[in-house]
Length: 351
View 1 (cartoon, rainbow, N blue to C red):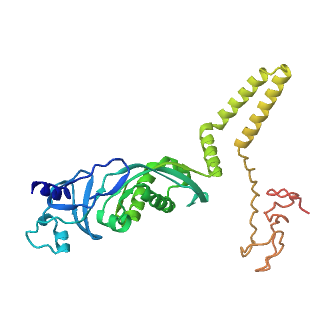
View 2: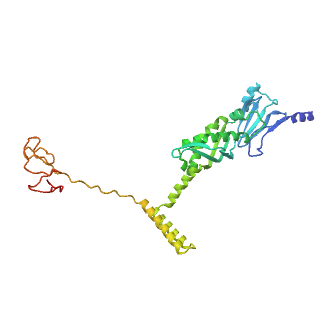
C-alpha cells in the first residue's frame, strides 16, 4: 500500500516555481510533464514575476510575488471554470505561465532608412538616428491574450522587432511635435528623448507593454545641414573680423618670410596681406550718402495795391489790374531796387 501511494504521489506536482535562466525570457510555461497538480501544492512566485493559471486556453487566476498553498479559496476563477464543489481536494490539470515583469534594458533601436521631418529653416530634412530603450510587461493578461498566445517559451526577440518599428514610425511625429529646430537637435537630446518617451508609450500599451525609458544617442543630419552648422560655428569662432584680418595678414607675412624665394616671397606676402586688408576694410565701411543741397526759397511777390500773390516778373496785378511800380526779379520774383541789374536773391541778370 505504501509503494502504491508513492507511485501515485510521483504522478502529482506539489511544488511549482521558476528560476529565470537568462536575461531575455519574457514568458515561461511551466512543464508539468503530463502530471496533475495536487490541491495544496506550493506555488512560489519570485520578485519581478507573475504566475497565471490557464484552464483549457482560458485565463484564470493571477498570482503576484509570494508563496501560495493552492486551494479553492485562492483560485476563485479556476474553481468557477471547473465547477468545483466546496471542499474539493483532488488533483487537477491546469497550465501555469510565469511572466517576467522586470525591465528589459539596453535594447537597441535605429533607423534603417532616413526619417523625414519638416524644419522651419531648411524645409524637409532627412534624419538618421539610433539609441537604446527599455520596456516591461505592464498588463500580464493583455500580453498573454494579445501577444504571447500559448507558446511554451517567449523571449524578447519576438517582440523587440515590433517595438523598434513602432519607435521609428513615431519618431518623426515626435520630433515634429517637439518643434526643436534641426540645428538645435544635438543640444536637446535629453529633452527630445523625454518628449519621445511620452509620445511613443501609448503606442505599445495595447500590447500590455510599457516603454520605461527611451534614449537618443545620436541624430545624423544631412550633409548640407551639417555644412550650414559648420559655417555658423566658424563665424562664431572668427568673432571680430578686423582682428581676424590683422591675424591673417601677420600669418601671410610670416609664411612669406619662411619662403625660399626670400625677398620676393616677402613682398608677395605683404602685397597679399595689404590687398586682403583693403578688401575687408572696404567691406566693413558703409558708403556715406552725399549731402542734399537745398535750393534757396524764392521770395514771394505781392500786388502793391490789393496784396494778392503775383507770378514772377508780373507788371500788372491779375486781380485788380494795378500796375506794379516795384520791380521784381524775372526769375525768382524777388523784389528789386530801382535800377538793379542783378537779383539780390538768385543773382539772375535783369533785362
